Length: 578
Ligand SMILES: [Zn+2]
Image 1: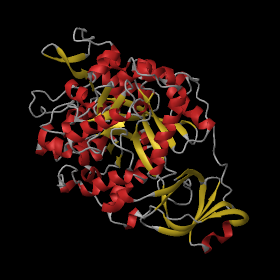
Image 2 (image 1 turned 180 degrees about the vertical axis):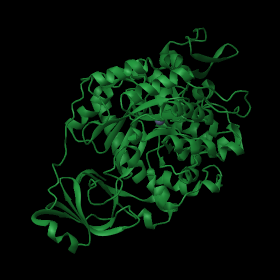
Image 3 (image 1 turned 30 degrees about the vertical axis):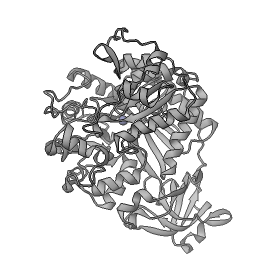
């Protein structure tokens, strides 16, 4: 996230929690696996243009699969000995690629506004078009029904106003309007929305929340969860059926971009263990289209890390438990907020401010939160956005990790958006790999450079090349729904570092090769989610593959976002068909 995982949760809890809690809280893995590989008899033969994802082999003509595992790959003749009369042969229409991996995305915090209108800068680069989109939605809606928008980011419209009550009244005179800021910290509302929520000019601010006022009159901005929850009150609450449909919609959208595995990066942040149990229930009802690795939220259920860890353990959710489709793998701790929301924690002040933000924990509190996860045997997954947050988390890690067993847990820092050379070297020394929200560069690079942090710090955004140079094993991720799940788009940004705003290149020294960018969405992402059996197509790996219109390993990175995916397979079984 930029910090959907923490900041959205309080406002969403009351709204979404009942639907998430409606099922059992006992995880019941379904074990859909295709059985054990026989080793010498293929139940599936894939013939065509196979791209292994391994630069040393690169392409193959055929791939033999048994029990969901690859038992042979090479020429068509090489496979003859593995094929029997009962082998099913498929010849996919396109290039067969290793399934792509998004190692940090969010299902649960994305559910609340999944059906809200997308008002992001990526969709509407001009402010006036945001207002026009709201007006158009209102014209199409019946009078009185809600017009809901998400991902509006005023930091990307320098010189423009925020969405005021007056402007929204003009755009939608007959409908309540509620728009969520991309940071998750603000709503913007019109008069009809305030009326529906029972909020007037005289309503006192709830503790910790603000109804923005100008000259004593509500101006349309609502800040922070206690006030945001008041605005959510009159909205219809999602049902369990809505949740099931939403999870499927999110994962299917990922599959549509060639993804076969994801890491859900804050499981339990709204409804505790019920979220993990629900994934198993949904997978039992119908196999999920994408494998889900979960990072258990260290404050799940609104508890302390020690209490949350005890709850996870009591429910049998231990490291690497679950099944081949839904597996519990990590321990998530968040140390700061969102850089574009100016709540990331920096060593130097934000432009135009006298503060660089603050950490979410005391040093002792952070060490305790990390230690609890380590003691339970979890891989650490630590959200660090600003350079001071990286420093803060590194100091804790340097105290806790040396000498501790479990070095193979592949601990991670998330986003790691702004780093120094010293910090990258120390991450390598202590055994922590970074996962970068690479599309920060594309969508927010100009805002960081021009209005939020200044050019020197902006150059230090998402230092993938320096991470490789430091000997780290980096990945890149979407942080969905902060950005869309589209690994090839993120990988193109890693190669080009072009800014959406003006097409310039942000610090070309951090550009990586196409092979390095693709490794960050395949093999390295697999390594980071403890999926060594995925990431390439090779003997012994799972038959997780996507059928694509082009081979990214041999095509111009500029064209990667245009690659279309017709099908995906998980364990050699069709998972998505477009
Ligand atoms: Zn996140």
